[in-house]
Image (cartoon, rainbow, N blue to C red; front, side, top):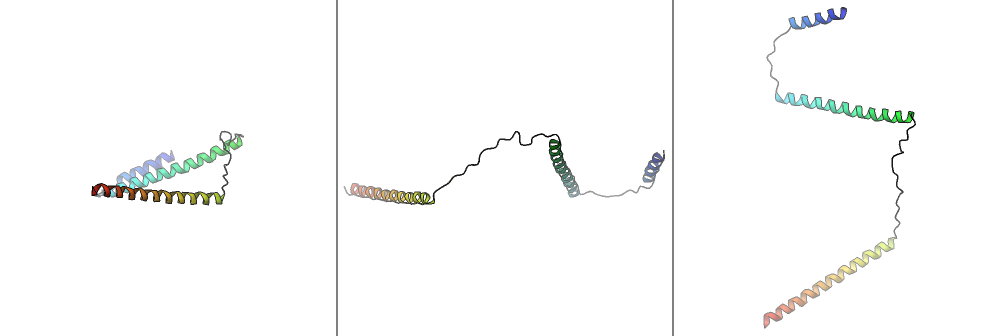
Length: 121
């Protein structure tokens, strides 16, 4: 009964002592309030997710449930390369590129000479 009396007294005082305020809430204030509320909701969700994960892990440890049982583990792949083979491949590629360029320029010269001969006729 004491609690009801205190609450009703507080509500009565608030209603009796109210003052009218002529105020304007700017749209930027509402936007800021929405952002603050969204930030609080996201933070609470993140904390709840972290706590849930930790609780789930501890429960699995207490109940002796294997956490790694369903995971598929593959062997490590190690590739050994010979540095001299890499440099030989690179030099072969460079030589092939140079030969292709020489052939292309020779073909271009032959085409130009044939066009010039056709033009002289």
